[in-house]
Structures are given as structure tokens and as C-alpha cells.
Amino acid sequence: MRRAVPLSLLWLATGLSFAAGCASTEQGSIVEGFYTFGAEVEVLQPCLSEQVYWLYGEGEKRRRLRAAHASLTTTPYQKVYVRVRARPGEKATQGFPADYDGTMVLEEILEVRAPGLGDCRARGTS
Image 1: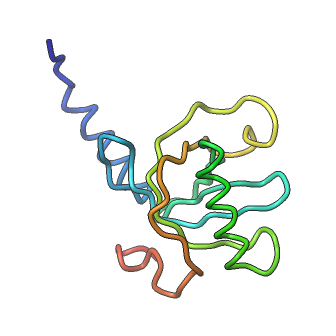
Image 2: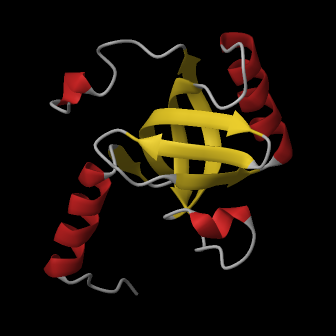
């Protein structure tokens, strides 16, 4: 039996996905933004958002993302542009992840590259 979802919740979910630079799918959302990695920092800042999320995920996927980051940067904490499939995680209450706006769980890496001038602006952002 399917439950009806109130229209107000659908509008809220659509608005939140848009505001976070996401395209919603059944497996998660496609998130475009900037990934930063360094000692005790592994975060994702979506396009169209000032919020920054700690990034969790299965070990091999995160190792691949970290390796791509290392190949594109010369020092820790530099940003790289990413398109990933991710879903919201639990809000952390302890440690470094608790210092951020929330958490996201990495499901799939779609693109990782050096940042460019047109990143995020193609969608009407500044």
C-alpha cells in the first residue's frame, strides 16, 4: 500500500534539492560542488549553497576521491570541482564532522576535476 506524500513536503524537498545544487534520484542526489580534503577535513560544498557537509561513504569510493584530489592539487585543503551522487547523512554530534552543517554519504563519483571559472555559474549562480 502506497502512502500519499503531502504536497507541502514535496515542495520542501524540491526546494531543498535545488538550493543545495542537487538533482534528485531514487539512489540519492547528483550534487555538484567543491570537495576539500586534508588532515581532519573531508567536506563537500554544493553549488548554490553556503553550507558545507562532512563527507562519509564506503572506503574504496572515498579512497578514489582522495586519490583524484591528490592528483589535481599541490597542497592539502585545495578545492576540486566534483559531481557525485550522494544522500543526506545523520547530523554528527561529535568530532570534526559536528562542526559542519551536516553530513552527506558518497554513493558514486561522476566527475572530479580542477575548478574552472564557469563552475556553478552555468546554473545561474554566482
